[in-house]
Length: 170
Image (spheres, rainbow, N blue to C red):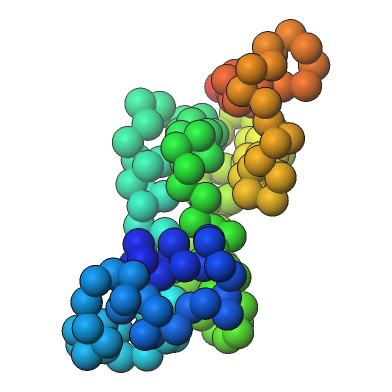
């Protein structure tokens, strides 16, 4: 059901996000959807909770002892695998800013976690913010990253960008 809702948002925008449309796309009755998500706000909250949990798990899955390096790797895995749900979720929640509170809190945590134990906290923060830019650019203008470009071109492919960001933190 969450996949169906995210797909509707990604394909057709916030206007398409109705409980009836989500139920139809998910192949369930509207009553079945309402059993799990009593309102559209509850559905959006579910998407946001899943987004946070998925990205936390992705960070945790990286084989890095440095949080910023794990964050960089997780960001590029998410972007390259098409997990660009942030935009779809934020768009869906735009009607009620209160629904974005958990995402804002998670982003605050992602951008501050373990900074105090990293060798260069300022550089770590810069690298994390650069990752946000990569995510935003990939969401808004996917053609800005041409997978066929070499990292030597100065334009930056995903692996080249990832490695450059990783080289800035230890």
